[in-house]
Image (cartoon, rainbow, N blue to C red; front, top):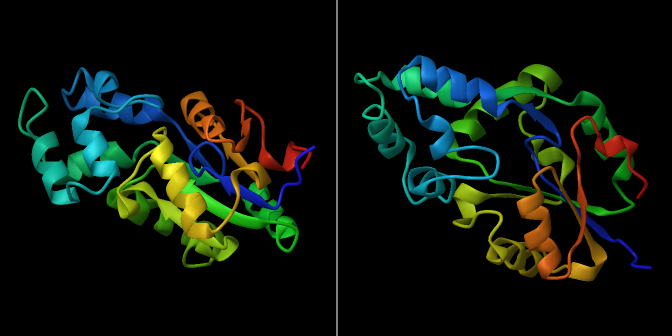
Length: 204
């Protein structure tokens, strides 16, 4: 049996409630009728891959998205639609992280972007009174800051090497099967968090 020393948590769908359908509907309402083909839980086209790996900035993203509707869109419309998926933090799950401190090294690994990062930081402060979710972790890894994105295995190699931790001593918890499967390929222990399941319900 493996001895777990480290736990890597995903953010959206694990610590932060998200609803991709809300963003899809918001863009559909703006006339971007094929949004689900551009971005969803398991897929991202070139534009969204570039945004979430930091290869384009938010201004470039807004410029591209304002042209994808049936009529020109305003930046604020695009921003509101893109952020619509972000709901609220799971407070009980955040509190549970505090109980794990000292038992494991905790890390956060998220596919995200500068727009969402600013939005969920604001949401986190409103709910908790703290500035950033980083307070719960030894280190956080955001795709747009490190230039790598799940489910590509390179991102897991990067985290392991940067953190100085061993795959076989590390548990990765994510709600996307694509990410779980790719992490398992390089020997990381994994748990797929199913709908309705919470991290505080698991046996560690």
